Image (cartoon, rainbow, N blue to C red; front, top):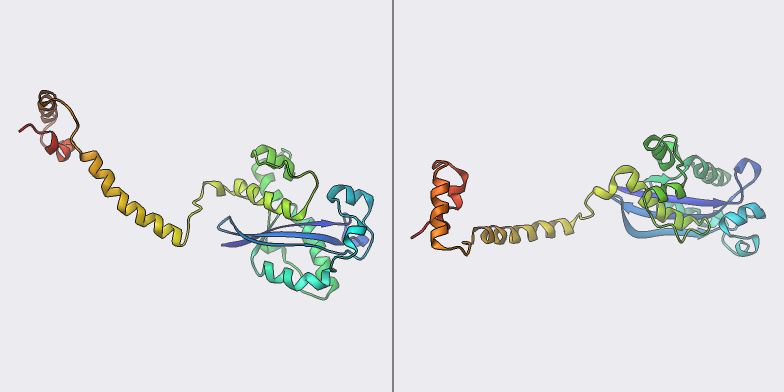
Length: 235
């Protein structure tokens, strides 16, 4: 099952006030395991970046002025997310901004029914508790030491771990495909060796073996131990 874990950074809090997306970070996961495929881009928002926003993510107008505009990266972005489920923390915020950018270009917007909001999952699992990304990292002992400032790609990577914790994903097998077949083949080879090891006669005295046989016989011939008794039976 392919999903895309995604985060954005913006110039402000509301696209209705003219604020724009300035960074998108997304990572691909399959069966909740990272595949290594990443989409990350800084975007020229075509407007100034207020100081309050810059203090959050660290991207200034000067840094972004030479970056591509959203219209020039949208095709790559849409190709990366495809029709996969999107996993986003506080999804309403990010989807509202992305949809504003898409609508500005006359493109189809993202439907909320394809989005998994980890904030909603966290509130259901931990009602009344703090459920920010930082709070969830602390609750699940996820290292967030690199998160000095908000960054779309770093936050997306951290969110993968949070998402796995919220859905029990860390208890699932990370082995699939050809690796699973190799594991099964290895088990088939090793299992007989393990059984042979169990059936190897113990190094005990002849008198002790005889006493043990008499003790087992006291349970009756149907006792399960008789299937392993042959190596112990005195000559």
